[in-house]
Picture (cartoon, rainbow, N blue to C red):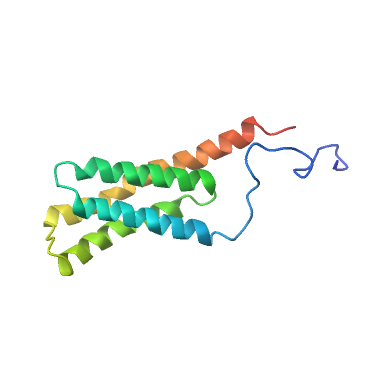
Length: 136
């Protein structure tokens, strides 16, 4: 379809990625909670020597995936996934026999940093792909 200015609309062009629909992000929010729970479980259960990097890897990769799939407002993925880790530390202290130290509780808030990098990087990658393969 051609507009009065001669530009083609998105309905006639073939896209590499499917078009983003507004709304209907419930599946992505549930996916973010699942990823956050996986990162939180990893943070609580893996030994203290290795868990920082494994938790950061899960957070950055899941935020990058969600940022790529839904690039508008990538901070929401950081917030959902990142808040799961301190909540899990708190629950582990009161419910489980795991008793994290004060330093472990404070370091759990550092999960927001790789999350920010992943979500913004995923959103930028999606915008780059959309710009590279857009027909003019």
